[in-house]
Length: 97
Image 1 (cartoon, one colour):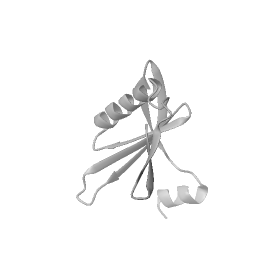
Image 2: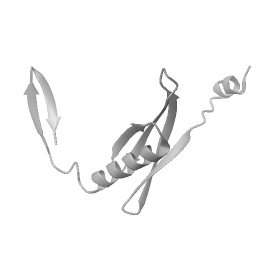
Image 3: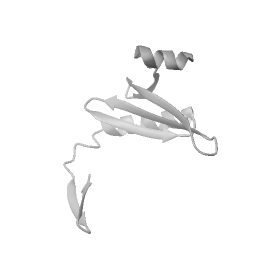
C-alpha cells in the first residue's frame, strides 16, 4: 500500500494553498494542479473573498497569481454592487452585471 493510499484510509487530505493580494489585504484559497492530455501543466484556484468566490486557471503560478490579484481588486472595487439585468435569449435566461 502506498503512502497516498494510507492517507486516504486515515481521512487525511493534503491541500496546497494559494494567496491573492488586493488593497493591502490577503485572501487564501486552494490550489489544484493537473496536466492536460499533452502533459502541459494546468493550475486552478478558488479563493473566498468576503462573501464571494473567485476562480482562475492558468499554465503557470505567476499568471495565476496575476489573474487572481486582478479579480480580487475588481471585487473589492464593487464589481458586483450593481444589481444587473436579466435577458432572455432563445428561452434561456442570462444575468448581466
